[in-house]
Length: 459
Image (cartoon, rainbow, N blue to C red):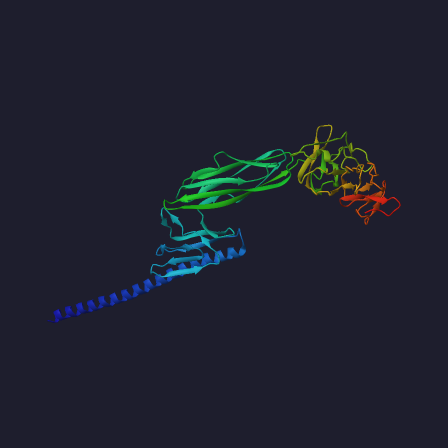
């Protein structure tokens, strides 16, 4: 009897313990679930705010600004219902609630996807403001550099390269083009297979290119490679774009003889005469003699006749000798012809030494065509009954002196005598006799003046 009672008591204690453990476990599960939801909400809020705040910062910083941020995306989030639309970023929580925030600028992009599904966890994203919208992009591609700087001597070429690697799990289609517009001085060419290609996951491509410099190239020439990549996950295409800056510095290998400055540009009006100063210098240790001068076409060579060579020193003598370590100064006058139209003109001049070494200078002139006013003088018989008016076929510029013609056509008027010319038909203007002169600043009509026999001038 006592043994059976003890067994029953033990069972009751065991049941009570199990009930207590169930209650404790239920309370713990609720607490864990509540804590998980709180962490999810906090992480989602941080991610949304990070996107919005960075977008606002880039918008305030202006076009071309960019930033890299860390996104934390727990797997419990409902990204299929979440998204970015206009200025609004929202994340739908597993509990059904939403975290929403609005930026000051439109944002274009989506949560990172792969193989048709969303990627969860922590990953970096790049935000870029192009002047209109902020783009949300991911590091699916790797570029070996963001800029390339080269240098080469005039008349030579130089080569370089950059590489592209596809880090995504999808095939990526790439298009590469260059914007390097310096055709008269520097030209860029890429390898034949470098403008359009496809890379699978992990594959890379080397973009080889060459820059050729003309013999008159001088200074820095820059441009860009524009790169567009397209990813397709079977549901939608996503395009990414990147720009790599390339520049080349053209230099001239300095010899014993050199002209300074090597490049001269200025603006002038039609009929101007512009004087520019130059110097020819000897960097060797001996006197250079027997210099000869000349000029030749550069790009168009359409101003070769606008200046005279050889170069003359301050005494008016041709420069044929330059002492060791010395420089000789000289001036050239550039006369802009009256028929020059507006535009850019250019030419080269050079100095050559007996060993065939030479130095040249490039000149370019931007011409403004300014129409020069021209005027005429017309004679009027003012009621003549015979003869003909004189004809002045000259075209006068403003400020020119006009010599008044005599009555060379033997103008007559019945009962009247010719009495010179006047700028008004009724004689109220300025009187002029044949052989007198005046400065012209407008078109002029000179009227014959008639005096009745024995009377006052006739109007």
